[in-house]
Length: 102
Image 1 (cartoon, rainbow, N blue to C red):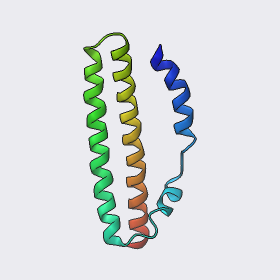
Image 2 (image 1 turned 90 degrees about the horizontal axis):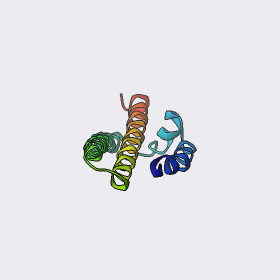
Image 3 (image 1 turned 180 degrees about the horizontal axis):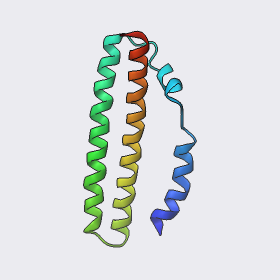
């Protein structure tokens, strides 16, 4: 129940920050091609790490009950949202690289 209530408030807040790839790429427009490559590597690693954390936390929630289960499930959900954010940044960097560095 707690998870559902928190999700009802958190999801609209996260969704309000949605941007297009082009808008997100604008924040990378001042970087050199070498810096873009470094940023892309960082975003790939961060996405992988967030997905791994989400999966591990999700599995851990299966072995808990009550409030702990709800909190672990919520942590897992937020890890996957973080991974999606890193994926959008990764796509924006790739878009900027294709535009300027190839």
